[in-house]
Each structure stands twice: as C-alpha cells, then as structure tokens.
Image 1 (tube, helix red, strand yellow):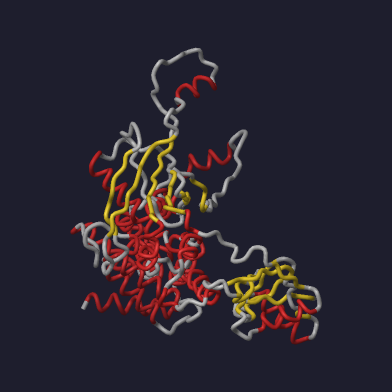
Image 2: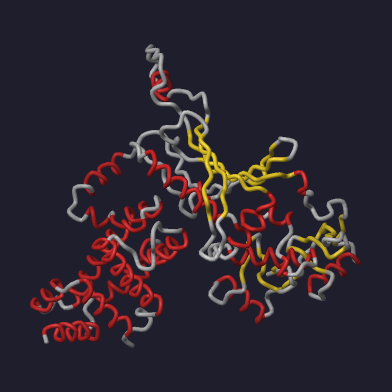
Length: 494
C-alpha cells in the first residue's frame, strides 16, 4: 500500500492521502489505525507529494517572501520540511516556479464599496419599489456603533403573475388585467465602504463561530508571514476584501435580522412574515458585489449553497401516503414529531419558543425511562410518574454521576443531562416571566448560538441517540439504577 504525506503550510505532517481521500492523523479514525498497523508491519510506504507548479509570493514591499503552494504559503524565512521539499523537487525537475501571477491579487484602489446581499424565497410585503435606510450596529458591547446603509427591494420589478402562470399551465383562456400574485423574491443589500472594512474586522473577529475560527486564524497567520506584517497591525486591505467571508457572517446575519425585526414592528407581520436568517441556512452566506469607482460592478464572492434534493417526479408511493395517514391519527404523533418541530422553530429563529416543546419532549422520555426502571413495584412507578420534572432531572443527574456502567453514563451523557437542566430552567423563566437568563432586550446571534448548543445534543440524529441509548438502559431495570431511583423516592417521602 502506498500513501502520500500531506502537510500544513508550516511543513508539519497533518494527514495522509490514499485513493483521492484524505485521512487525518486521528487515532479514532479507523483508516488511520489501519495505516499505522500497515506501517508497523512494513506493508505500507509513505511517499512525498509532488508539488508541481508553485507561485512566487511577495511581501508588502514587493520583496520575495515565499511560495504559494497547494498546502498554502511557504515562507522562505522559515526552515521547514516543505521548504526543503521545494528545493529538492526544483532540483530534480518535479517542481516548477511561476512568477507571472505575483501575489495572485488585484490592487483594490479602484474598489469603492462592497455590497453584501441576501436573496429570500419570498418578497418583502408592502414594497412598491426599493426602500433604503441606515441602522446603527456594534459587533459587541465594547465596540463603537456605526451606521450602515441598506436597501430592501423585490425583484424583478416587472414581475410575472403567478396566477397567469397557473392558468397557462391549465391552458385556461382567462386574461386577468391586473397582477394578483407577483412572482418576486425579496433582497437585502448592505453597503460596506472599503475604508470601513478594518473597523468591521476588528470587531467581528471575536464573533466568528467556532467552526470558522481555526480557518480564520490559519489564513491570517499565512497572510502575516507572506506580507511580513505584525499581527498587531492587522491584515491589509487586499486580505480584508478577498477574505470577507471569514469575518462578515455574524455581522450579516445580525444586521439583516435587525432590519427584518424593525420592518415587522413598523409595518406588521403581514400574512407571510419575512423569515429571520439563521447561521447555516442558504441566506446567511452573503453574495458580495464589488462596486468600482467608475460606476461598474462585479461579482466579488458567491455564496456557497448546499441543498439536498430528492429529485422527486412521477407518482407518489401509495404505501408511503397510507403510512402518513396512519401516523397522523396516532396518539403519539405529537411526541414523535416534537423534535422535527423544534428544529423548524430554530431554523426560523424562534429559539425561546422552541424551549417549551423541547422541554416537553425531554419530560416525557425521562419520565418513561425512570418509571419503567421501577415497574416491578406499581407504587414506586406511580410515585415516579407523579414527581415533578425538576425532581426527575435530579434523579437522572444522580444516575449520570454514579460509577455504574461508565461506558453508558459517560461525560457525553452527563453533559446532555446538564443541558436538559438548563433547558428546563430557561423554559420556566420564559414561559412564566417572558425572560431569558442573561439576555436583555432583543436576542443576539451569540445568545442564539448558546441556546443552539443546548439544543444540539437532542436535535442532531446521531447526538440524540447518545442521549436516548442511556435512557433505554435505565428503562431496562438494572438493580443498581433501580436502587438510585428508589433511594430518591424515599428521600422525597421523608
């Protein structure tokens, strides 16, 4: 077996490539474990990657500073494995240098402003033309507020009528003189002057989500190394323009939702209210259009859109429809569909409202597990059923903290119990007092992230099984677990 070594831009081995798939250096990865065994047995050979064509790169003074490779920027100021590999492969002809592209960036002097755009599936209600305004925004509490100009509008301006399309599909002869249902989509555009990108970056770099932060850090370090800049100076304007997707996500979602919220409060929700943006949906990743000083515009950055389609066409399976009809008549339908409804509420931005449904679901499954654990004694079973959810959470926490079955009641399960307790606390405060812990005024994106972290262990298909499997174990009535439950019942009676 032959595998190829893969490196990060510092020349450190970080993965292997085999059959066009990348295998991380992670002992938990079965492929990596297989490679380690093969290396120990001498049946596997690791070869160096062929670098092919690499490009010369220059610093801010246009002095040669390193190479741009498929592993990233390799500095000539550092003696690392990739540097040595470049020299070896240049010498034997496996690597060639291109100097035609320079820094592979365009001077930003002609770029005047960037426009961040989102396209909605539905039009803005009430609009008869473009609607502009300015709204103050600060990345976080210690940032200075700045006004940002925005435009909301519906496209196309001369819309085709949906009803006319429907009639045409049926080959109906009606010819309506007015537009009843214009076929339009809503757009928001947020103006970002190029001169203000540094201010935005300095505030937003602390707000990037955890899954973006490592890539942002890595990109900045490569940039500082290539340009020979100090981190205290921050990135240059070229980097700020070309990497706006790294640091503008929080701003874009939060500012857009401010505009949507203000619009709803001023003009009403209408019969089909505009949906809020949430991180991860297609609208939350902006399309960026660059406007130049000469009045022209160009696509600067395209939003990545990943949506799955079942490519449905033809006749709907009758058996599937019959199963659906049977399910919706079941007494457990609300329970079985609870988590999907919670997910939908979170995607629409109704995080506080999702607390009540998720808490109700947890209350049902925890009561089921604990009551089944003591089902051999009807009195104990009745007592568990009649306990409050808070007390049942205490019992579940005691089971999770016990030393019994550590392969079942592990750190992951204990973390989910803590999340269930927090969900119960937050739900009570919201339902009974219309408040949430540590939140004043409108819920911000960082606060929604914290709430989504609580939800994640129960909504994700794999993660929820990590919680439901221990509950199934509890329900199977083991002696040790039953004793913990009975002890808690007796303490309750005393």
